Amino acid sequence: MRAKFCCMRLLFIFLLGTLSVVTSFPETHYHDFVVQETPVNRLCKTRNIITVNGQFPGPTIAARNGDSLAIRVTNRARYNITLHWHGIRQMRTPWADGPEYVTQCPIKPGGTYTYRFKIENQEGTLWWHAHSRWLRATVYGALIIFPKSGSSYPFSAPKIDVPIILGEWWDRNIVDVMRQALFTGAAPNVSDAYTINGQPGDLYKCSNQGTTKISVKSGDTVLLRVINAALNQELFFTVANHALTVVGADAAYNKPFTTNVIMVGPGQTTNVLLKADQPQGLYYMAARAYESAQNAAFDNTTTTAILEYKTTTTSRSSRPILPQLPAFNDTASVTAFSSQLRSIRTLTKVPTRVNENLFFTVGLGLINCNPGPRCQGPNNTRFTASMNNVSFVLPRTISLLQAYYQNIPGIYTTDFPPSPPLKFDYTGNVSRALWQPGSGTKLYKLEFGSSVQIVLQDTAIVTTEDHPIHLHGYHFFVVGQGFGNFNPTTDTAKFNLVDPPVRNTINVPVGGWAVIRFVADNPGTCLVGPLPHRFTSHLGFSHGVRGRKWKRAVAVSGAAAAGFAAMLRD
Ligand SMILES: *[C@@H]1O[C@H](CO)[C@@H](O)[C@H](O)[C@H]1NC(C)=O
Ligand SMILES: *[C@@H]1O[C@H](CO)[C@@H](O)[C@H](O)[C@H]1NC(C)=O
Ligand SMILES: *[C@@H]1O[C@H](CO)[C@@H](O)[C@H](O)[C@H]1NC(C)=O
Ligand SMILES: *[C@@H]1O[C@H](CO)[C@@H](O)[C@H](O)[C@H]1NC(C)=O
Ligand SMILES: *[C@@H]1O[C@H](CO)[C@@H](O)[C@H](O)[C@H]1NC(C)=O
Ligand SMILES: *[C@@H]1O[C@H](CO)[C@@H](O)[C@H](O)[C@H]1NC(C)=O
Ligand SMILES: CC(=O)N[C@H]1CO[C@H](CO)[C@@H](O)[C@@H]1O
Ligand SMILES: [Cu+2]
Image (cartoon, rainbow, N blue to C red; front, side):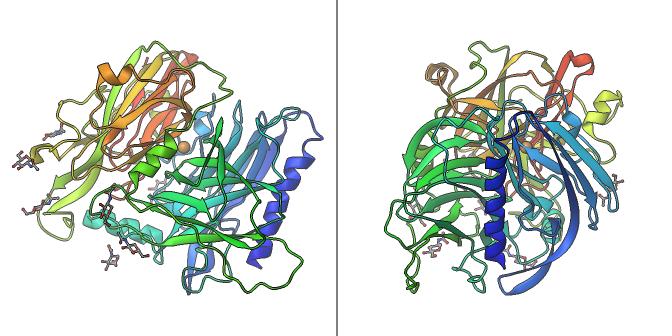
């Protein structure tokens, strides 16, 4: 049943890809998404999870560059929910971006909301997910953008085109896991399994039958659209005995390069081409954790799917070949992979001059508390996260966007610091006195049209760790990355202003920094938000707001759980 469903899905995408070649005008695609509770059997247990239309993963949305989408969401579940279209620029449609209490109030049980937006100048793989507490653990799906009709990929068209959605699975109700962590202040339980297209794969108990299978014929070229939909975990991904040619990331093309393994941070996507050039047989695709925080608990399991060559012979007894994956702490492999990304076909030039030079520390924090059930973090504390020493507090009554539009005071302030209030040796031995951040709903204003640079600097507070940072409503250029503290003199000189990768989510290196640049050209939408990490107590979001009369751009930068900075300007 499962396997069949998978094939049908593959076929569907395939048909869409080929059929719509016939039509030459932008289309509007209508979808009905019903959020509901659905029983699902995984790891020997049946559990109710929240799904869209009873599907897990949720429906794949396929469209062409230039098309519009209208997605009517009906909430038949018992939780408030919103949906977010991760990576969609949402030019002039900030209300459709989705983060709860940032661009909209949640859709209540029984409620309906229609998201309408246009895909402009984006091609490749994105995804959609719930943006309301931790519901995105099960509420997610692929969002595939084909080239406009008459235009093509910058590589020869693949024979097979299939999403590979990596996820995390908990045996417990994810909302309970979240509530427990929020209550105790301790790190949340790690997941019980990773999944590929919703299935853990046959290295886990009771998972043989459902294992995702991709059928190929010798000589086929396969486009794997790898999406990391995990709640928290960076993941290595590889396919036994097959080289992977990376052709895109976060819906932007890159200069192709070949590798055996890729690392995908939460929120990121990577398109790889695979040539079925090996002896007929079964080959595992596998993913497992990249974990850079020292001594942190993490899910140390491996998820698999099977690449199977269609063959006329019936002998099928052999076990699939298992690939080698890097060690969980193999940062060198991550750097070797990410440093090869170089963009092509960018519509805009990399800003060479910068009007806004921002410097954000990103990292963990500990809040001291009175010993007791709500103080279960290390040494009587509660875990948190921060950007520039501000732990972001989400509004509870109306969204930031609405507060901005309607001039409602008291919801946020615009004093988010453009640089750390205190300079210290960020990645060195940080004094314990600096570990507790302040909190607030702080935004930073940006001038419409300004060229913005943000240095994202990890800190050693509690521990160094890589952090996925996501900007809503924008693609940005990653002009530099490195380890240690960012040095404006020596590091700036090494920036790549020629062909830097274009992304919507950057994994800031552990104990290091990344520098991004973009032009604030999307009035209303934008927000820098670390995706949540295990120690953060709320979810990451970001979003943006739109300027009245299009004169202003509001960018809100958020840090998950806690750190959330924001930007916005008159
Ligand atoms: C659900 O959302 C509504 C607003 O849309 C809000 O009033 C209510 O407090 C929310 N409920 C929970 C449990 O967050
Ligand atoms: C992860 O699991 C493997 C066995 O699958 C084991 O050899 C290794 O020590 C584990 N690593 C950690 C950090 O737990
Ligand atoms: C990775 O962790 C292992 C212990 O599991 C340790 O021996 C090794 O030195 C670590 N490698 C790096 C690069 O930190
Ligand atoms: C907790 O306290 C112990 C003993 O003082 C110390 O060794 C450890 O580093 C502390 N941990 C944190 C996270 O502060
Ligand atoms: C870190 O600094 C503290 C004082 O701030 C000092 O007590 C400690 O020994 C230092 N640790 C290391 C490894 O340098
Ligand atoms: C953050 O602010 C708090 C006060 O709100 C202060 O105690 C702490 O030292 C600051 N930390 C840093 C890294 O600036
Ligand atoms: C590793 C870990 O944090 N495990 C916890 C998961 O949740 C259960 C139930 O609350 C706890 O008992 C475990 O300690
Ligand atoms: Cu997003």
